Image (cartoon, rainbow, N blue to C red):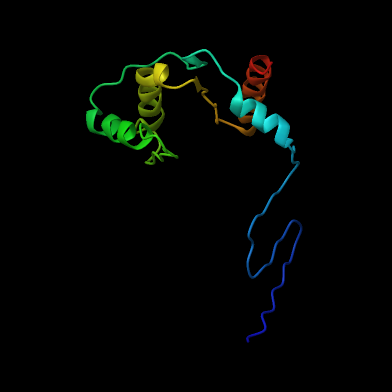
Length: 133
């Protein structure tokens, strides 16, 4: 067995051989009861906060790929990646608008800054709390 020596130097430094889960910053812990009630709550079909759809031309194959990936019964996550300005958000928004009635609940998270993310998630939590009876 080899001995490893790691050294972290400086403020907020981290040194490790293996990190299974790393959490930085404040953490809000949600109870199992809250998570289950949110999962089991029934929202009206098509409930959403989607922004208006900008012009989106073409992208038929990409929209088809998203539908094939997300339209499965055990669908997980689809990742759309590319350089800035190529239309990733527009593609995601076009998919969301086309299929919003196929999902019980669809929420647009604005990720322009940490503050935007926090506000979007707070709005989502507020909406979810209204749905849980």
